[in-house]
Image (cartoon, rainbow, N blue to C red; front, side, top):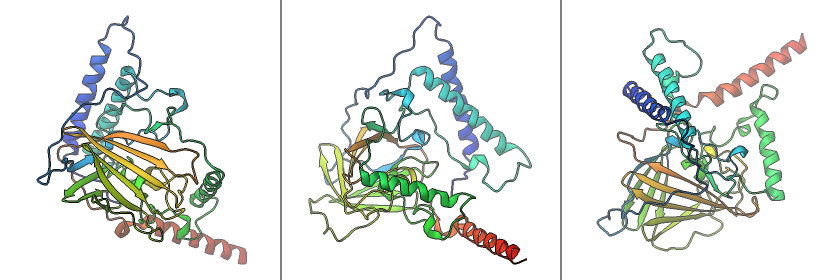
Length: 357
């Protein structure tokens, strides 16, 4: 894995601190008698924007879009928020103060001589949100922000997935590489996992050409080349981790439908985790540019073998000055899985030797 380590982080951390403290200061100057504004259950009125056109006349969505600001947002909404999709202004101010505190801690570690050495990377190697997320969850439908009930097959796969997680516990060392998910094995995060925000490398680059749109996902470095010429999907016997995508325009919105997924490989979650989906999975994405730097992203999940009804994820992705896609050298530096397997075998040999004595 290759998280960023750029010299500009010092300036970035300082900027976060001052911006966040300004937000907190402004919130603290409000009169105590002024009641907090109630949080909205529904999205604010969408801005209307006409994106520029490509030379061949399609809406121009090109650029690198990032979901870093939602990396700490839960996929499912915590129960205490009910059907409330947005945080209040007071809650946002507290979140901004926490971000400032974390940025200050990173700054101190960055400049401190003889920083503590550990088996993990230093804290400033990680990435943090630049501003507090407004949403209480990534799921926007059902209204409670929770996944819909599972089918019997979905319940079965959920139990099997939970059982496999014990492979990573000290009580049951991994027996083979098959005890690890496809993300840990550097194979794929799946389509949903490639764009849902995670702890780092949340960039997605959109490149357009006549009749095609290409989405390049930073993490695991996968590219999806999507035709726009209304050709049918490939035959049902042709399947892959990322499925078969077909796109079209609805006004200024790019709509992408993807089918032909492999069965029981990845789930709808960060890094492709979660309940493994089925070969009946159908995903519909919608990309709508709402201002010069912001794209509204929607993902509708329809898997009748796993979920009792379709459900939807939606969040903004933004263009950030200076953001670049970095090479994701997962296989080249994937020592964690190899070391875990060799360590487990060493423990087994030691236990056998002790038994012989």
